[in-house]
Image (tube, rainbow, N blue to C red):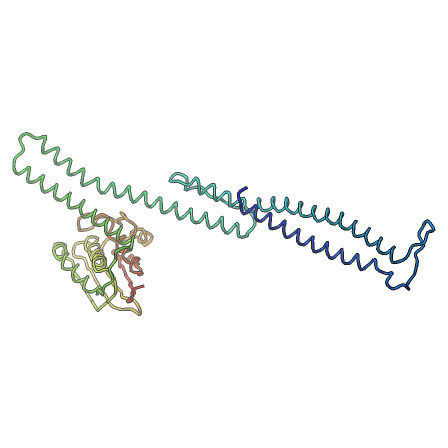
Length: 373
């Protein structure tokens, strides 16, 4: 037989009952022995008159009585201890089996888990004990797994859709151009521009996915001194043409915000925030950026005007491939900007939050610890 927990608890209960019964048996043996020794208080040579009229020496009668009592106690006491042990064994086996039934349900559900069965739950309705706590913990774990698996499926589906779009554009342009026997150099040049734009979009999406995966994995991250204010300056320089085209006003109050982290990821964090502030703005809008130290944290705040965003939708903007509101002045992005910011903050033991502004626009605040966690 396999040494299961049920069997071990049953045997342990049997041993405890056997030990307790043996101690009681020994105590009864001693008490009976003391109880049938009254002859010691009688004078030497005292005899006992039996029912049949015969006389027997008191001490001999005492020894015979003690032997009979010990024999009766040995037989009946042994049977009683054995009966109690057996009844206790079967009772413990049944009770332990009933108590461990949720564990068998946990095992059965765990063995049958798969992508299509993550909706199964134990649903324990017994007493509020340790088994109920284990069952509830397992159900909560399945809830988290189901949510993560669903999010992963949505992520894969969205990523496939985002990649399919530029690839479909490329294939359509090539097929249409090749099917035209009278295509000229101007048409080929136009096709080349469209294909280049689509390939750049696909390449940007792949790069963003790699950054997101690297941030979430938290492997191979460098730990170097980085000033968030310096990353802001580089991002503004990269977006200068778009800022001029949309006639945006940029206000900065940049104070040193030193942190220890991966320079490339932190630069990407500042770049994504500023790119979002530019793209999700309106013509002639306003962008304000502040950086500095707040206690044990370095803060970076990026705000922008724009169309109104519902505060209830703000939390979802940090999920991959989520875009809020209507398209703004810039080109359509991949929907990974804020999700990368969130992943980078988590990789550096920091936090990020956003507030929808009345009248339109949003303000995003990043807080990273001055010292590495």
